[in-house]
Amino acid sequence: QVQLVESGGGLVQAGGSLTLSCAETSGSVNLANVMGWYRQAPGNQRELVATISSSGTIQYEDSVKGRFTISRGSAKNSVSLQMDGLQSEVTDVYYCTIQRVFPGARPAWGRGNQVTVSS
Image 1 (cartoon, rainbow, N blue to C red):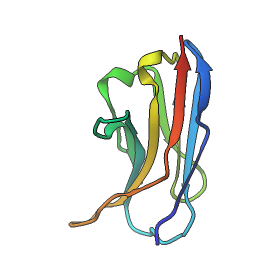
Image 2: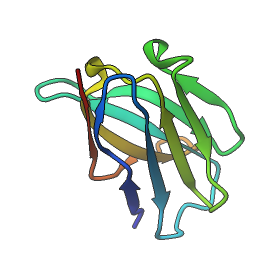
Image 3: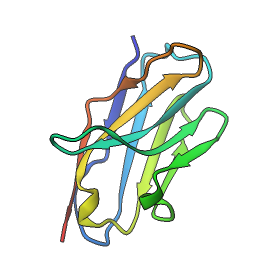
């Protein structure tokens, strides 16, 4: 059973920074995979923020390019998202995800971390 443990959300003033971290702790994901972060506001669909594959391919949502940096950690199947220059429009719940790279694989999700930027 895939298990994602997230940390690092919270409240920050506009212009500040936060780092989100996530690790898959069951050890059951041994194939190539993609990890990343999505965000979701109440009543809205979950939206891509950034992803990184186990081979290092990175994807960012356009509005966060240049401000957010995603990276793999030294631990197996861990990922961090450094968020700089935060503005109130990024206030949301952020969900970590991991998905094995093979046909039919479905993503697993963490519980979510609230990120609130005060203006």
